[in-house]
Image (tube, rainbow over all chains, first blue to last red; front, side, top):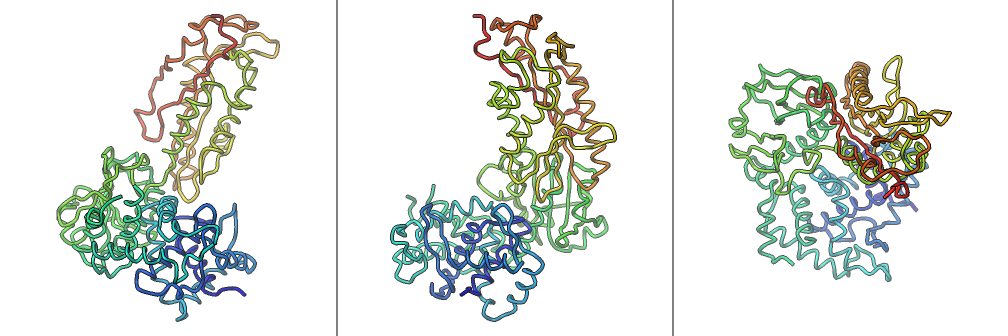
Length: 193
Length: 349
């Protein structure tokens, strides 16, 4: 059964990044969606609100069966095109996205996905992936048990909230989520150094 | 592991907070728009051809009379070393007369981006009369944090090719273009030399297309053209060889030296101009690549040995160019010379 939220996120991320990147790989889409999920947590939403789950693969990257399935489904419907293992949007995909963007179900998550995609303005996607790979939720997840990265009982989520607390203490409350998004990336970067 | 206090101090120094604290949260959307347009601008121009670039967002009456509105795609046709622009929308901008522009004064109302060539931190912003670096890190080799890697990537690739590939004659096509001792080119080595460089660049460069024999005028194709996806940047590479070649009878043909490289440079200038006429919306930059197989006192076509001194006599001897086009025009890069060493077995001593 296709996951409508994952379909929306896939279309949104591919569309919002196309002025900078003509196409994205599934891994890049997944990283940006995962980043959006963490920003939703920053804003105080429970993990279960995201609508689908992530696991960690052997390379230490987040993977999502729902996003992978969405890409295949959207290709089949002509709403995405695939070239050299990367996806780019089509006219039909943009039409569907515009329709979905107006639906209440997908309105609140656009802020998180937008902030995640906006962070590509100040760095490359390779840098972003590199920084996010050092996030505690990913690094503390066990590959062997294939633990869900966004399950509520994940102890790394508590660690994440501690980090968010430090970010909040440093920057205060900011209206535009782009600022906490950049700040949290800077936090991870500092921890990696 | 950094302490919590250190992390907080680092986060509080972030550039984006200065914008938010000074101009309010609406300015964050202006900042995002400004940066996304800067990225587009740097795909439409060759940043290395400018001394400074300033940019801002917003409509301010003091500069309306000195503005010229144009499409982003046409921006490289503006002849100036000091570019000042106001971003209007996704595709349009105003070019502001440089001598009218007071960035310090304008920064009282909005942030102003300033880029300067050859500065360690080239990307800066005026915020309420003070310049702030966009990042504490040094500007990357492409000249700006917002520029895409095109010509810089190609330059790095050609330097690597010179030092690590051509010098020791690595690769099928390059080794098939000359005899085993590497004293003479085989007859008409041009195709193999083109294929050697094309193959290397295709593997080494990302997000671009590398093609041989691209037609730029009625009579001649340029040896290699490189185009980068999503940008208007084009590189034309003209290949020449110098040294001696053998003809079909195994005799030594006409030797080529500096004159050959100079004629290649003049040819390349024509290609750049013709390509610019054909694609006026694109930035065209020319590269001359000269494969150097010169040896001293290398007059026996059957020779398989050479003294170390004669083999390497030209290794550090540069070609003399007149004129030196790279000093006369910004779209002509300093020529690359790929000296090729003789094979290890070819040394007499």
